[in-house]
Image (tube, rainbow, N blue to C red; front, side):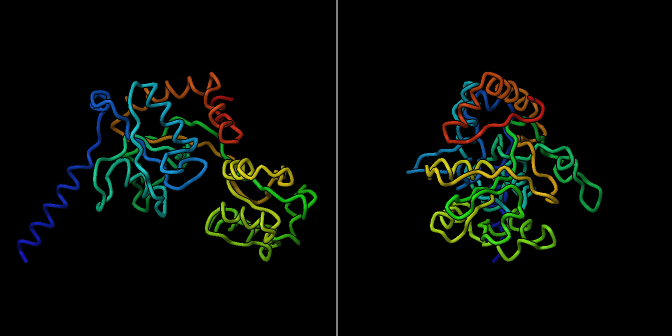
Length: 290
């Protein structure tokens, strides 16, 4: 038994030893940028026929190339909270994981309030992380089928139309509570926006609500002129527009500065907008570039 305990402790120590933050000089010396991308999250980061794809993947590749580095993707299954993801991939590592931490993580909200969030003891929740480099604005979007719904000037138009949403998502909670539950009975829940969209094409629902990028991508892939984007707002929803950025370990600010320089070039010369266009997505510059 004692040998088993010692062996287990040794394995744990080895796992911790592997999860070391690489500083900027070591990254440049080794010639590889390790980037954590969310797994199976089209159109942002996913695999297709065994090859990585998505706008976040393309951005990570462009950033690495701008620094003269080769990109190594670390696929990140999402945790229950963003705090968990930052811990697992940026500053501590997963107890059961093999290999090193990521040098960089994409699709992190660029939000001062979140960055300064404290726990019940008054401690910064993400003190070991630097969130920087906003690279796009995100928002919620509704798509609908013109064959069953003429237009959507406001959410009131959906009172008699089933709406597909991802289970446990912001749109799901919103439809359950907006206007004192006016649309609660019309919400139909699916494991993913992709399946909700498939349900709309099959006639099970008349509209779908998800992230703008997800809706843009699904419309682009469907290539059906009868599927349209709604331009309505969402009263009482809270924050409907936010910036998306990146994160590194708090000790790796030199890497953050170098990445920000490359990112600014990609935004200002239109490269990032063209990249988004390849996937059928609209690109909206973050607030600081508008």
